[in-house]
Length: 353
Ligand code: FNR
Image 1: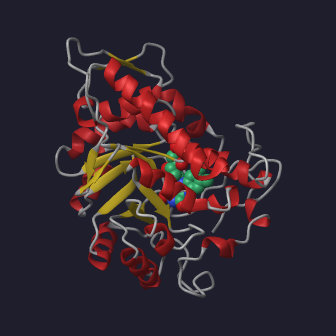
Image 2 (image 1 turned 30 degrees about the vertical axis):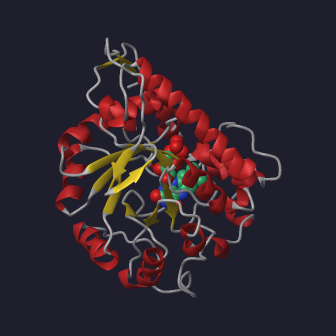
């Protein structure tokens, strides 16, 4: 169930880092369908205008947050992405060490090429991202290993009953360059060949409850894009909802996350936490995410790009991003992530949405 690599040609993205197989760089940058959601994601954050609060004491700005009962140093984290070891030999370990140093949460893909035990040993606060297979029982081994390795939450991705056809680049399918077995190190032996290992096409509320019971961890539902979806997730027992378009890699032409986050946050109220990802790139984007009600903002591709320079690449990228976020928060007259919530925003006239 991987992408065929035969979509429309990709637009030229940021340069593929030297030493990385071009098909891997293209895989990271690609979007689904005509690439509308991919192109719109960052632009949509640019549609908002912030009205700063005046006469606030912003001497002390602290971006720390409580997420699902644990304290983190910053309300920014790494979204789950695959192929980290194809970008740098340290892969997930480089990301984990850099994020651990900053106290930022790391969400680890089920398709990580590093074992959960090694990732957990870095001390990073990490959550497992899981897809539920058609035969639910096949996931038990993987879930158990994540719990044993200290995962603090399980993130159920609900936007992927099937992997979308993607806009592959000129180098063709990444799976001709990468051994699919390398992204199965956390699965039971023989998982790939097992009947029922394909992604479930009948995900329901019961799966949220089942994941919670099986792992004993809070469940986050990733891929929510409206109030109804958010309420359904919360009613099913989700401790948090994650507004996401999967980086424009699943259904093309869904709404941009920047445009629907506020609706989701209002629908959820205090019943669950709210997170967001998709196209977030600079400090003002993060300010907007927090203002619109997200307690944590996650980034995917920027982490992968920074990972080309290993742990130090990710660490220095994250330092730059958080420094920019502190500046934006201060300029808006706020002192922290939760303090940004409810900041007065206006939609720009002539914006893209
Ligand atoms: C992803 N994403 C993703 N999501 C998920 O739930 N499980 C996964 O295994 C993956 N794998 C993956 C690989 C790559 C290369 C990318 C770029 C993305 C989606 C990811 O978690 C996140 O939703 C988006 O990447 C966020 O958008 P930005 O920050 O990349 O614009």
